[in-house]
Length: 284
Ligand code: GUN
Image (cartoon, rainbow, N blue to C red; front, side, top):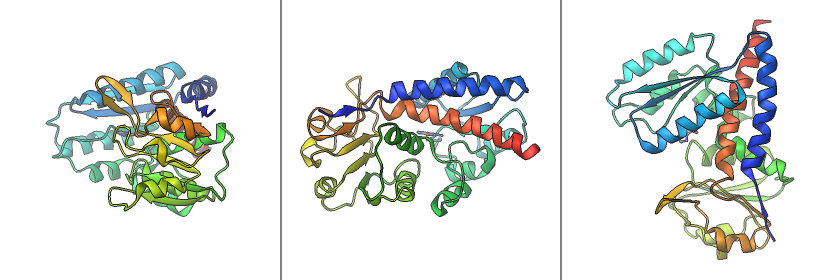
């Protein structure tokens, strides 16, 4: 019987630990602050941003929510980021993606000061991640690694197959697994025989954004399956993995919802607290 990896419970434990840390920081007037910028009103983005705000409240992090109209110009957004870069009450700046088409995402990400880039999307942080230097690491990949650690899964020498090559999940999680000494394969839309690649994997990380695309029969007996997908199908959330059949083969698997999702936000909070601690250390 597969272990169902309870991301919700693990995230709650992490939040409780963070709340204690924030309370200690508050005693020296060092409450961490996170600015979250949403441009436009995409319903999914609105809901993610609201969850981030609630999570901040729960652990005592100061959260500044900034909602801008969809027609906001790139230079206006850059000016806001510049202001937040210089605001000592703000330790993390997150611009919710995707942005409206008239705004160049790379310009925005590169405008965020790398020391406040709690999403870990800035090329400075991604470059440091690739070279194995300390940096802010993207929240979903961090959450995935934390789930594996908490479940006692050691990646050294394992075949890890990542499905999806996004800058937010696929590429960084592949680098992080490599740093843990895994043999990493990255699959994507042009991969020839996906089922065969999946069948060789000890650990599969699915981040494609297509409902139930990975079929249970493809997985190796005893595989560890991490499902990053959050797809809405007929009002219900489903992952990228066909859970009912995959759970029969897996040794451990994350559910959707309640697997990777809650961890992403917990890691955002952890990065924000870390950012504050780094700025305190830099002042001393
Ligand atoms: N859109 C989807 N996931 C993310 C994320 O982790 N960070 C940001 N900023 N936008 C997102």
